[in-house]
Image (cartoon, rainbow, N blue to C red; front, side, top):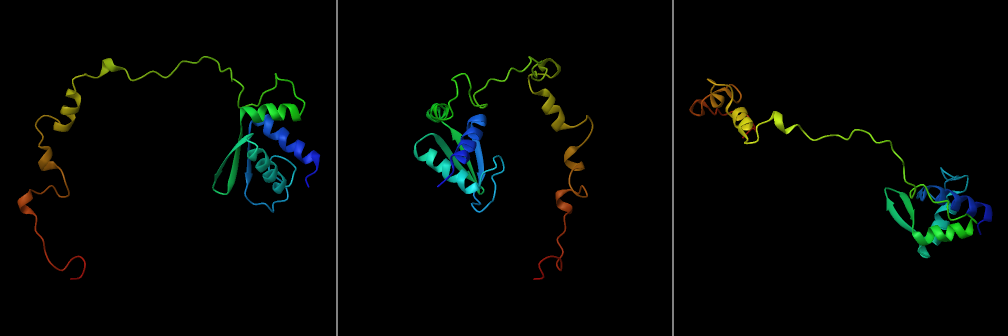
Length: 152
């Protein structure tokens, strides 16, 4: 049986953020966000999950619970909170209007793709095929000698 003060602490932490995270390690003395045993947190959240008040996600030995709309109304009634108070996941953040990142300046580059063709061809007067590769040898100059490699 779980003390009511533990259940209230868990529900308050869940309602404040709208989400709750707990490690699967049930033998932990205290939950990281609340001063409640981790076992109580996991079991209280399992109870809310079975009633459809939270959605559960499990990854890498951690439980992640998200409040549903029904869960918000249930916790509001349980904790005797007014309807103006909402979890922080539902609050709108008023960010100051900043200059948005603009796309690339399309006037500085030709639109017909000639800049790419010029890059692939290289500077005028150079032979890119002859200048490429290790040692820059012609295809007929390659010699294979035995004795090197896998020991066959």
